[in-house]
Length: 196
Image 1 (cartoon, rainbow, N blue to C red):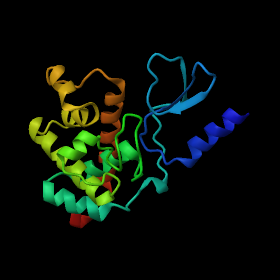
Image 2 (cartoon, one colour):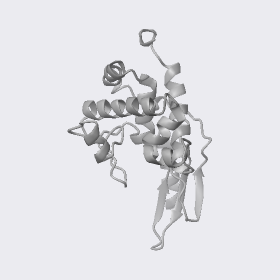
Image 3 (tube, rainbow, N blue to C red):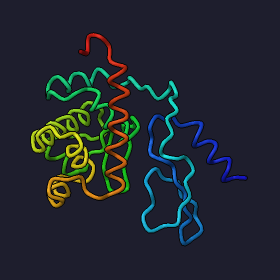
Image 4 (tube, rainbow, N blue to C red):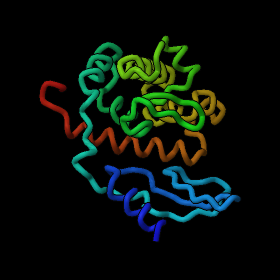
């Protein structure tokens, strides 16, 4: 009964639009885990299928739109892409930290944050600036190929190079690309007239 309650709360409290599925598995100690990434090497169950397309109005987060627009103009990156990456990476949580150490709204790894001269990865303006600047750098490296830009953002540019300029065969990366593209399409439809 407890598991069903948790699943219910997860499904109905989170805004969902084109999210990856939600999966559960039990580890060696008998602890239940829930994740939006397919567990590798684990026997798992699908709780929410990946094809879910429910749109909840609360999923439209405009808290950072003015910062996004500012850095979008500075670096020449589509604001819908910036916002889509942000949603896929942190779901708009400025204090988010991934198990691998990525930080803030756009989930910058410490090395990437240093490269982009981000002093405080938990400061929304600094993080969005750094993430947007990094997207611009990747856009130049991969000649505007969105799938490769997103693959490099998620898995690192070296993985794309190792795979002969193809998306690496990593399920998390493939899922990330798919989610970002869906979010981007959604945000493009929500643009105000003055955004172009």
